[in-house]
Image (cartoon, rainbow, N blue to C red; front, side, top):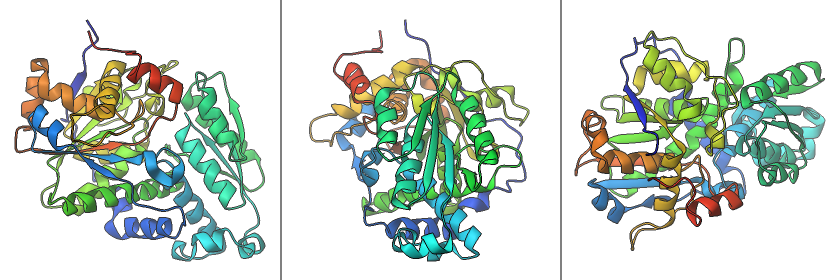
Length: 404
């Protein structure tokens, strides 16, 4: 028998909720205006899986497909690029609204700003986004990857002109390494989507960049005639994307926010661990954190996002690898008439989770707590495509990590 999904309803004491304003509608609108200035910008699809929804016993099931984002096969570039623009704007004493793509790629920027070196740690997608943006903007990038990172993801970052290494440590130690090197480098800047004491400003800018994805998705839902989702499932590593989209959703639907569900890789489920502890303090998870969900293999939460999530999440779920693999296969081969979605290991865990909750009686208590039924409208975010194509084929074609 495969390992079970562990879940915990949120009974955490609430904080003063001071971080919610990071994702105000005004701040997200600024980020989206910045992204719109890029010639590569296009709204990514929102796949509407009507037949899958009916099969699972839902009214609506929509999946935001980030495999189309800027040709980079993942959403992460939204955060890194906006944070870099905000940093440059701050150094120049200007507003980010002046940091258009045309200006940032111009000779004027070189004269006004010069060149910085942006350091980051990554499982692949965030580093590729930072490297791509640095390359486009004439800046330098240094990227450290944890042990177990694949050659494909390494090569994709190296192609963007960044200095890339795979270190013999886990993701969280790579973050510490990148931060230390940035501190010792003239014009060095750490651009990381996790946050710790003393390092919260740049992560908050990354969050705002992710808001573009959430803003698009909710507009697309409205275009489909869905006024608001009832349940939103957000996958989490450090929790930056989850915290960002949660805060944006709460700000948009202040009077009646949807239920938010967090899905983590069980081997790295630091947010779930904090929920289980129940005292309001975050928890960390150590070790190698080896999971197919490489983008979620983070054992130390973003403290800004933890504060948001503890106040607004309904349930925290720790998902074994088979959940992501199941989601990948269901999205790749949906019911005839529904669009297929190429979703990678970290992108598909929400699909595997909603399918399991709706069809496996072992999770009836969670299903009832989320009030999931034939009237429910569910929104998922597939945050990456086949960023490791060989692994994708082994799972989707070869049946790796199948449920028993």
